[in-house]
Image (cartoon, rainbow, N blue to C red):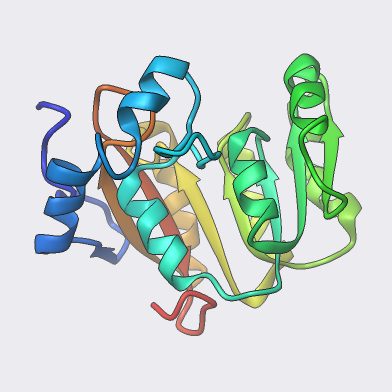
Length: 220
């Protein structure tokens, strides 16, 4: 499978799945990634940036395109794993809380964020504390992003901290290790849409998925 493959591919799952596809998705991957979406610049810099050097989440390009067009204003976001995604979300959200296990990387991002971002450091190896950090915020979120450590435990806990229309974004969702917790989300009433294709930096396809309920903030 090459990194030019179609964004329409669906990976089998017991969970009901929608897919972002059609001609526009294929065009996005085949014709726009290198030029319009800045893949070459991201590859050269080793950072998830667009063609103007602005931060992007390290999700697949189809997922980013979907979110740009669907996200409402004034959302509250929680991230497992900070990074350039934090800088991207801070321009679109009322508030962003990110938990990070790598202290030096957290400090790098901390120097770049605005006042609407809170970074929480949990040292590597404290997996349970990392996963339950969201409890300490004492609030509910419109979006929870799982793109860091101990993702299985994070998937298990996050439904308790979503607003009624909240969504979960799971990166690298094609990994077999997450299947059990993905099925748990299904049993709790979540549906799933997969965005498969290339993204910043990498030379291969992967999958970013959004989990949502009947009523959700991205109008699925």
